[in-house]
Image (cartoon, rainbow, N blue to C red):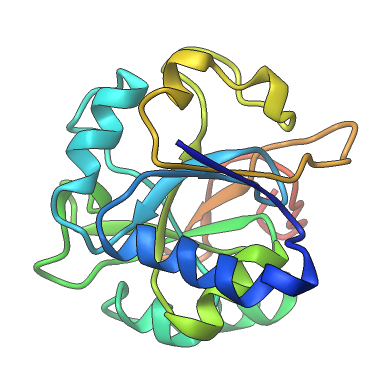
Length: 207
């Protein structure tokens, strides 16, 4: 496993960003920081990645993974439609800890699509994701970096050693938020949107 500290040193910054992108494009599994908890994932468009992630997390393979984006181009690789309500909420809360459930494009990997054809998408506010988006516009699988039924963490030294032994890259940048919460999840297909999970973002009209 390769381990990198983020922010990357200026002298190797561009090289490290390209390394992360290369590992993702080749089907690698990365553990990386977000604005909420450490996440585990990789290229969301890789048809084999979901099976590997499910095995690492000891998670049921029929449970789809949420996705993370850092650009409009990445969003367009995932969603079938973009309702006006989604646009309004995105303008107000993205980038940030808001996950929207939307109709997914057909022929996406089964690991990121629900049985009802939906996909869960969040535009991350973490600068690492934004930097990756500049060079690749790849959507990422983003699920908490923990074994199933174990708590997520914001600290690299609390990541499960068994999980880390199965990944290709660890990017260390501990979240300084002392009271972290998961992202808020809403179903945008209905009007008004339906709150599926309360989290860091509070939307009064939905709450």
